[in-house]
Length: 408
Image (cartoon, rainbow, N blue to C red; front, side):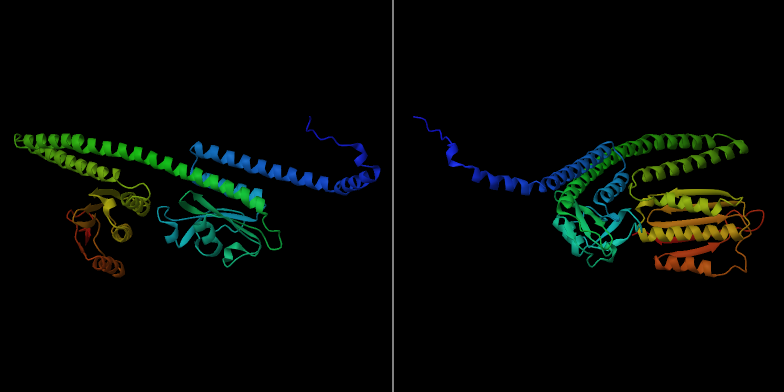
C-alpha cells in the first residue's frame, strides 16, 4: 500500500487562485528593490575583499608598514565614503591595553591632517581599543577630533595584542554608517592589524640578523684587528729605541700615536655596532652638529670619540649636544682659528674638550655663553673650565674648554 499523498484537483477551485495571483502581483514592485539591495551588498563585499587581498599582498611583499597603513586609511575613506580617516596607535605596543592612556595619530586621509596628535583613550576610542569591537555613533562624541557628523571607530587588534584604532568620520547631516559597512570595515582593519603584526615580526627578525652581523664584526674588530694594530705599535716602539736618527725617531713616534688613535676609533666603532636601531646615535648627532656649525668656515676640524657614547642617558646626552654646539659656535665666531679639535670621552665620566689655535677668549665676549656652560655642568654634577690651548697658534694663545659630568 502506497503512503504517497496525491493532491486532488477538486480541492482547489478557481476562486482559490485569485488571492494567490493578487499576492504575487503585490510583491512584484518589491523584487527590483530586493535585487538592487542584493546586488549592492555583493558589490560591497567584492570591494572589501579586493581591498583586503591587495593589503595582504603589499605586506607580504615587505612593503614599509607605514606606507601600507597610509594606503589603509585611504581605502577605508574611499570605501566608507568618509570625509576623514585616521589611524592612532599605541606609542609602545608592549604596554598592556589597560595601561595605555593615550594614542598617537600616525596616519591621516582627508583634510586637516594632524599627524602626531595625542588623543586620550576614553569614550568610543577606549571601547574600540580595549574592547576590540567596532563602535558607531550617529553624531560625534566628546572628542572634538571627531567633528559633528557620524563616527565609526574600529579596533586595530591581533588577537590579544591591541595596536590602536582606525577612526572614520563624516560631516554633519550625512547618513550614519550602516551596520553591514561597519562589519566589512572591521574585517578589513582586522586583516590590516594582522598583516601589520606580521610585518613588524619580520622586521624584528631582520633586525636580529643585523645585530648578529654587528656582533660578529665587533668581535672580529676587537679580537683580531685591534690586537694586530696594537702589535704593530709595540714593534714600532721597539724600533724607536734602536735608531739614533732624530728624524726617524720622530716619525716613528708619530706613527705610534697615529696607531693609538686608530685603535681608539675602532673601539668607538665597536661600541656603535651595539647601539639600538630605534634612535639616532649620540655620536651621529654630535657629528651632525659639528658639520652644521663649521660647514661655512675655513677651519680644519677634527673630532675624536672614545667610549660607549650610546650608554649616555638621555638627559646627559641633551647636555652633551648643547655644550658641543655652544663651544663650537663660540670658536667659529670669535677665535679666528685655523684648527679646531673636538674630543668626547666616556669612561667613569663624560668629558668634552674643545680646543682651537686662535686668538683666545676675547675680553669683550659676553659671559652668558660661558655661564650657561658652567651652569649645565653644575646641574649635571660636574664642572666647566677654560684655559689657553695646549698648542698655541700663530694668531694667539688659543682656547681649550673642558666640560665634565659624572656618568650614572
